[in-house]
Picture 1 (cartoon, helix red, strand yellow):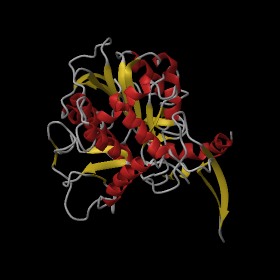
Picture 2 (picture 1 turned 30 degrees about the vertical axis):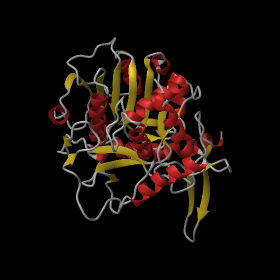
Picture 3 (picture 1 turned 60 degrees about the horizontal axis):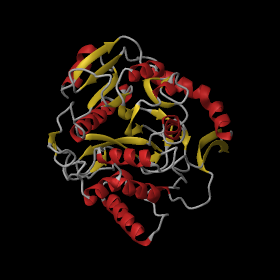
Picture 4 (picture 1 turned 90 degrees about the vertical axis):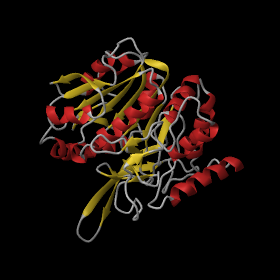
Length: 406
């Protein structure tokens, strides 16, 4: 395929960059921890995997542990297991995770490769959810230790995880461009709904106005400050004290990706759901659980009203601006489009990618551009469909149909 050939053309230079970024200092080992005193290999369990984030500080881990707290609150009958690489040495890593009240089960000395992770997941009981918080690449998957330590469709032993998920399971890959190949591929392998990003992902922080904003210059209000307390995302308000902060989350950017993998001409601004078997009962059950357990604007619960659930679905889809106006415009647009039957409405600031439940219409290609001094090769994603995209409203409709799934 064209996109694979073009990807291979830049793979060598990309590998050199990755080695430069990650090779100088790799994590020494990985941690297995949970909120329960032991891990029952027969009990249904929720799993969070945290990849290397040295260049991002503790942000991957902060967002991941904020989600772990939400999962424990939403579904206290199921243990939450955290598998994380070690960033800063035994003492500092232990101190960080202890703040969340976890029990440590292992401080392993081996590097966390994809193959090792599969073996760890096989020791855990049926998985009700599996989420990754890490760097990711569209063709290489979410990172673990960094560099070539990845979890992707070529990881040895993936098929051994088939059948190890609950009837209402879901998976989310919180990482850049994870929806092009990884999310549809994992869904096909395991028959569960998998959500992935069709663009860059970044960290949002909870502001004092009760709204989530990206923590980048110009992307949060100039007046006010970051909240010292999160009073809306959880059943019980939580303090936003560093470093054990429940006030971070990962969310897709609302513009096309530009970064190490190129300059993309298309994308979507939310975690897109993929169900390889179509909209069957397992798809709807998993989508519902994913929406209700999200770190959002209200605490999702099994008894959520349709109004609360709709707020969660809108928050899942809509991007934001420094004033919150873009978010409000997106939410109002969803209501108008739903009322009128307009399937082509989108809140994305760019060319919206065409997608179905089984995959998207894209190609990764490279073209040459020149100026007076140099000839440059520019690579990136393009949308191969000329039809108006319905992906945004299709996923909203999917989430709403999932409301009554049990």
